[in-house]
Length: 291
Image: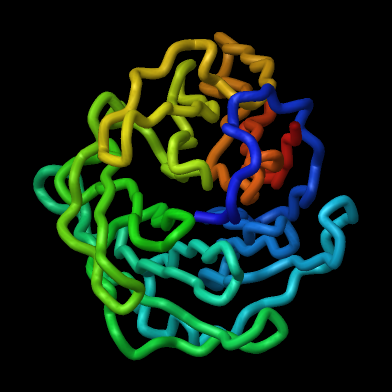
Protein backbone atom coordinates (compact mmCIF):
# COMPACT_ATOMS: atom_id res chain seq x y z
CA UNK A 1 0.00 0.00 0.00
CA UNK A 2 1.13 3.54 -0.43
CA UNK A 3 1.45 6.08 2.30
CA UNK A 4 3.68 7.43 5.06
CA UNK A 5 2.49 8.28 8.58
CA UNK A 6 -1.08 9.40 7.99
CA UNK A 7 -1.74 12.77 9.58
CA UNK A 8 -5.51 12.43 9.28
CA UNK A 9 -7.76 9.54 10.19
CA UNK A 10 -9.21 9.23 6.68
CA UNK A 11 -12.63 10.33 7.85
CA UNK A 12 -13.09 13.66 6.05
CA UNK A 13 -15.00 13.74 2.77
CA UNK A 14 -13.18 13.66 -0.55
CA UNK A 15 -13.87 16.35 -3.13
CA UNK A 16 -14.93 16.02 -6.75
CA UNK A 17 -12.63 13.69 -8.71
CA UNK A 18 -10.18 15.35 -11.09
CA UNK A 19 -8.80 13.69 -14.22
CA UNK A 20 -5.11 12.70 -13.96
CA UNK A 21 -4.58 10.40 -16.96
CA UNK A 22 -7.04 10.59 -19.88
CA UNK A 23 -8.26 7.60 -21.84
CA UNK A 24 -5.99 6.03 -24.45
CA UNK A 25 -7.89 3.72 -26.82
CA UNK A 26 -6.79 0.12 -26.42
CA UNK A 27 -5.01 0.75 -23.09
CA UNK A 28 -6.38 -0.24 -19.66
CA UNK A 29 -4.58 1.21 -16.61
CA UNK A 30 -4.86 -0.99 -13.52
CA UNK A 31 -3.10 -1.93 -10.28
CA UNK A 32 -2.58 1.71 -9.27
CA UNK A 33 -0.19 2.47 -6.39
CA UNK A 34 1.23 5.77 -5.14
CA UNK A 35 4.23 6.50 -2.91
CA UNK A 36 3.61 7.91 0.55
CA UNK A 37 4.77 11.40 -0.39
CA UNK A 38 2.36 11.48 -3.37
CA UNK A 39 5.19 12.05 -5.86
CA UNK A 40 5.28 8.79 -7.85
CA UNK A 41 2.26 7.02 -9.31
CA UNK A 42 2.90 3.46 -10.55
CA UNK A 43 0.45 1.28 -12.46
CA UNK A 44 0.15 -1.51 -14.98
CA UNK A 45 -1.07 -0.86 -18.50
CA UNK A 46 -2.78 -3.65 -20.38
CA UNK A 47 -2.08 -3.11 -24.07
CA UNK A 48 -2.67 -5.27 -27.12
CA UNK A 49 0.81 -6.75 -26.76
CA UNK A 50 0.48 -7.53 -23.04
CA UNK A 51 1.31 -5.92 -19.70
CA UNK A 52 3.56 -2.90 -19.21
CA UNK A 53 4.56 -1.38 -15.85
CA UNK A 54 4.87 2.41 -15.84
CA UNK A 55 5.45 5.31 -13.45
CA UNK A 56 4.60 9.00 -13.52
CA UNK A 57 6.65 11.37 -11.35
CA UNK A 58 6.57 14.93 -10.09
CA UNK A 59 8.67 17.04 -7.69
CA UNK A 60 5.73 18.73 -5.94
CA UNK A 61 2.53 17.02 -4.86
CA UNK A 62 0.44 19.96 -6.05
CA UNK A 63 1.90 19.84 -9.55
CA UNK A 64 0.76 17.70 -12.46
CA UNK A 65 2.43 14.34 -13.00
CA UNK A 66 4.89 14.10 -15.87
CA UNK A 67 4.75 11.73 -18.79
CA UNK A 68 4.81 8.03 -18.04
CA UNK A 69 8.09 6.13 -18.01
CA UNK A 70 8.07 2.40 -18.63
CA UNK A 71 9.90 0.16 -16.14
CA UNK A 72 12.38 -2.49 -17.25
CA UNK A 73 10.35 -5.52 -18.48
CA UNK A 74 12.87 -7.85 -16.83
CA UNK A 75 11.31 -6.95 -13.48
CA UNK A 76 8.38 -9.25 -14.29
CA UNK A 77 10.02 -11.64 -16.77
CA UNK A 78 9.32 -14.37 -14.20
CA UNK A 79 5.59 -13.82 -14.87
CA UNK A 80 4.81 -16.01 -17.91
CA UNK A 81 2.17 -14.91 -20.40
CA UNK A 82 -0.77 -14.69 -20.19
CA UNK A 83 -0.30 -13.96 -16.49
CA UNK A 84 -0.66 -10.32 -15.42
CA UNK A 85 1.70 -8.63 -12.95
CA UNK A 86 0.00 -6.80 -10.07
CA UNK A 87 2.08 -4.20 -8.22
CA UNK A 88 2.20 -2.18 -5.00
CA UNK A 89 4.90 0.31 -4.05
CA UNK A 90 6.23 0.76 -0.52
CA UNK A 91 5.74 4.10 1.23
CA UNK A 92 9.34 5.12 0.73
CA UNK A 93 9.28 4.13 -2.94
CA UNK A 94 12.18 1.69 -2.60
CA UNK A 95 10.30 -1.59 -3.08
CA UNK A 96 7.75 -2.81 -5.60
CA UNK A 97 5.70 -5.83 -4.49
CA UNK A 98 4.43 -7.96 -7.37
CA UNK A 99 2.23 -10.98 -7.94
CA UNK A 100 1.56 -12.89 -11.13
CA UNK A 101 -1.69 -14.75 -11.65
CA UNK A 102 -2.72 -16.77 -14.68
CA UNK A 103 -6.38 -15.81 -14.98
CA UNK A 104 -6.86 -18.33 -17.80
CA UNK A 105 -6.15 -21.29 -15.50
CA UNK A 106 -9.76 -21.63 -14.37
CA UNK A 107 -10.59 -24.69 -12.25
CA UNK A 108 -13.89 -26.52 -11.75
CA UNK A 109 -14.94 -24.04 -9.05
CA UNK A 110 -14.35 -21.06 -11.29
CA UNK A 111 -11.22 -19.90 -9.46
CA UNK A 112 -7.61 -19.62 -10.53
CA UNK A 113 -4.43 -20.34 -8.58
CA UNK A 114 -2.32 -17.97 -6.52
CA UNK A 115 1.20 -17.05 -7.57
CA UNK A 116 4.45 -16.06 -5.87
CA UNK A 117 5.03 -12.67 -4.26
CA UNK A 118 8.17 -11.09 -5.70
CA UNK A 119 9.90 -7.83 -4.81
CA UNK A 120 11.88 -5.37 -6.92
CA UNK A 121 14.20 -3.04 -4.99
CA UNK A 122 16.24 0.11 -5.52
CA UNK A 123 18.73 1.84 -3.22
CA UNK A 124 17.44 5.37 -3.82
CA UNK A 125 14.40 6.98 -5.41
CA UNK A 126 16.53 8.08 -8.36
CA UNK A 127 17.89 4.58 -8.93
CA UNK A 128 16.61 1.66 -10.99
CA UNK A 129 14.70 -1.31 -9.62
CA UNK A 130 16.29 -4.78 -9.59
CA UNK A 131 14.40 -8.01 -8.97
CA UNK A 132 15.09 -9.75 -5.65
CA UNK A 133 15.76 -13.45 -6.39
CA UNK A 134 13.64 -14.64 -3.44
CA UNK A 135 9.91 -15.33 -3.16
CA UNK A 136 8.00 -13.80 -0.26
CA UNK A 137 4.96 -16.07 -0.02
CA UNK A 138 2.03 -16.54 -2.37
CA UNK A 139 -0.94 -14.32 -3.16
CA UNK A 140 -3.62 -13.73 -5.76
CA UNK A 141 -4.55 -10.39 -7.40
CA UNK A 142 -4.60 -6.77 -6.15
CA UNK A 143 -1.76 -7.18 -3.67
CA UNK A 144 -1.16 -4.25 -1.31
CA UNK A 145 1.10 -3.92 1.71
CA UNK A 146 0.70 -1.91 4.90
CA UNK A 147 2.75 1.09 5.99
CA UNK A 148 5.34 -1.09 7.75
CA UNK A 149 5.20 -3.71 4.94
CA UNK A 150 4.47 -6.47 7.46
CA UNK A 151 0.83 -7.02 6.47
CA UNK A 152 -0.42 -7.77 2.97
CA UNK A 153 -3.96 -7.65 1.59
CA UNK A 154 -5.25 -9.09 -1.67
CA UNK A 155 -8.30 -10.47 -3.46
CA UNK A 156 -8.27 -14.26 -3.47
CA UNK A 157 -9.83 -15.99 -6.48
CA UNK A 158 -8.28 -19.40 -5.78
CA UNK A 159 -11.59 -21.18 -5.15
CA UNK A 160 -14.30 -18.84 -6.44
CA UNK A 161 -15.25 -16.41 -9.19
CA UNK A 162 -16.01 -13.80 -6.48
CA UNK A 163 -12.94 -12.26 -4.86
CA UNK A 164 -12.40 -13.09 -1.19
CA UNK A 165 -10.56 -10.21 0.51
CA UNK A 166 -7.80 -11.62 2.71
CA UNK A 167 -4.76 -10.53 4.71
CA UNK A 168 -1.46 -12.15 5.71
CA UNK A 169 1.34 -11.06 8.06
CA UNK A 170 5.07 -11.56 8.60
CA UNK A 171 7.67 -10.64 11.24
CA UNK A 172 10.26 -8.81 9.14
CA UNK A 173 10.94 -7.51 5.63
CA UNK A 174 13.09 -10.56 4.89
CA UNK A 175 10.38 -13.07 5.86
CA UNK A 176 7.70 -14.47 3.53
CA UNK A 177 4.08 -13.59 4.25
CA UNK A 178 2.21 -16.30 6.12
CA UNK A 179 -1.12 -17.98 5.36
CA UNK A 180 -4.05 -15.85 4.28
CA UNK A 181 -6.91 -14.99 6.67
CA UNK A 182 -10.34 -13.86 5.50
CA UNK A 183 -11.42 -10.38 6.64
CA UNK A 184 -14.41 -10.42 8.99
CA UNK A 185 -17.42 -8.39 7.76
CA UNK A 186 -15.71 -7.50 4.47
CA UNK A 187 -17.99 -8.85 1.77
CA UNK A 188 -16.69 -11.43 -0.69
CA UNK A 189 -17.31 -9.19 -3.70
CA UNK A 190 -14.80 -6.52 -2.57
CA UNK A 191 -12.10 -5.83 -5.14
CA UNK A 192 -8.72 -4.10 -4.74
CA UNK A 193 -8.34 -3.91 -0.92
CA UNK A 194 -5.97 -1.12 0.22
CA UNK A 195 -5.19 -0.26 3.86
CA UNK A 196 -4.57 3.41 4.66
CA UNK A 197 -1.52 4.47 6.65
CA UNK A 198 -3.56 4.97 9.80
CA UNK A 199 -3.84 1.14 9.85
CA UNK A 200 -7.57 1.60 10.48
CA UNK A 201 -9.33 2.21 7.18
CA UNK A 202 -9.51 -0.23 4.28
CA UNK A 203 -10.49 1.03 0.84
CA UNK A 204 -11.84 -1.17 -1.92
CA UNK A 205 -14.13 -1.37 -4.93
CA UNK A 206 -17.59 -2.76 -4.19
CA UNK A 207 -20.41 -3.66 -6.57
CA UNK A 208 -23.51 -1.65 -5.68
CA UNK A 209 -25.57 -1.17 -8.85
CA UNK A 210 -26.00 -3.68 -11.65
CA UNK A 211 -22.44 -4.47 -12.71
CA UNK A 212 -21.02 -1.13 -11.56
CA UNK A 213 -18.46 -0.67 -8.78
CA UNK A 214 -17.90 2.22 -6.38
CA UNK A 215 -15.16 2.82 -3.82
CA UNK A 216 -16.05 2.12 -0.20
CA UNK A 217 -14.14 2.41 3.07
CA UNK A 218 -14.22 -0.16 5.88
CA UNK A 219 -13.22 0.69 9.46
CA UNK A 220 -10.90 -1.71 11.26
CA UNK A 221 -11.21 -2.67 14.92
CA UNK A 222 -7.85 -3.25 16.57
CA UNK A 223 -4.99 -4.50 14.42
CA UNK A 224 -6.54 -7.78 13.28
CA UNK A 225 -8.82 -8.86 10.47
CA UNK A 226 -12.15 -7.54 11.88
CA UNK A 227 -13.75 -4.63 10.02
CA UNK A 228 -17.13 -2.95 10.48
CA UNK A 229 -19.81 -3.71 7.91
CA UNK A 230 -20.03 -0.76 5.47
CA UNK A 231 -23.11 1.41 5.08
CA UNK A 232 -24.17 3.56 2.11
CA UNK A 233 -22.45 6.49 3.86
CA UNK A 234 -19.13 4.66 3.55
CA UNK A 235 -18.98 5.30 -0.19
CA UNK A 236 -16.03 7.67 -0.38
CA UNK A 237 -15.80 9.00 -3.96
CA UNK A 238 -18.45 11.46 -5.17
CA UNK A 239 -20.20 9.55 -7.90
CA UNK A 240 -23.31 9.91 -10.03
CA UNK A 241 -24.26 6.98 -12.22
CA UNK A 242 -25.75 8.05 -15.51
CA UNK A 243 -27.26 4.60 -15.97
CA UNK A 244 -29.41 4.15 -19.03
CA UNK A 245 -30.81 0.73 -19.84
CA UNK A 246 -31.73 0.93 -23.51
CA UNK A 247 -34.40 -1.73 -24.19
CA UNK A 248 -33.30 -1.85 -27.82
CA UNK A 249 -29.71 -2.83 -27.04
CA UNK A 250 -27.78 -4.89 -24.51
CA UNK A 251 -25.78 -1.82 -23.44
CA UNK A 252 -26.11 -0.58 -19.87
CA UNK A 253 -24.36 2.78 -19.61
CA UNK A 254 -22.56 3.86 -16.48
CA UNK A 255 -19.24 4.08 -14.64
CA UNK A 256 -17.25 1.84 -12.30
CA UNK A 257 -14.35 2.85 -10.04
CA UNK A 258 -11.53 0.40 -9.36
CA UNK A 259 -8.08 -0.06 -7.79
CA UNK A 260 -8.02 2.75 -5.18
CA UNK A 261 -4.67 3.84 -3.74
CA UNK A 262 -4.19 6.51 -1.07
CA UNK A 263 -1.31 8.82 -0.23
CA UNK A 264 0.39 8.64 3.16
CA UNK A 265 -1.60 11.49 4.68
CA UNK A 266 -4.81 9.95 3.31
CA UNK A 267 -5.64 13.19 1.51
CA UNK A 268 -5.26 11.94 -2.08
CA UNK A 269 -7.22 8.97 -3.41
CA UNK A 270 -6.36 7.72 -6.91
CA UNK A 271 -8.50 5.28 -8.85
CA UNK A 272 -9.32 4.05 -12.35
CA UNK A 273 -12.78 4.83 -13.71
CA UNK A 274 -14.24 2.76 -16.54
CA UNK A 275 -17.20 4.43 -18.24
CA UNK A 276 -19.41 2.42 -20.59
CA UNK A 277 -20.76 4.57 -23.42
CA UNK A 278 -24.01 4.25 -25.32
CA UNK A 279 -22.33 2.50 -28.25
CA UNK A 280 -20.97 -0.24 -26.00
CA UNK A 281 -17.39 1.04 -25.99
CA UNK A 282 -15.67 2.17 -22.79
CA UNK A 283 -13.14 4.71 -21.60
CA UNK A 284 -10.54 3.93 -18.92
CA UNK A 285 -9.17 6.95 -17.08
CA UNK A 286 -7.23 7.69 -13.88
CA UNK A 287 -8.72 10.20 -11.43
CA UNK A 288 -7.76 11.65 -8.06
CA UNK A 289 -10.12 12.82 -5.33
CA UNK A 290 -8.63 15.06 -2.62
CA UNK A 291 -9.57 16.28 0.80
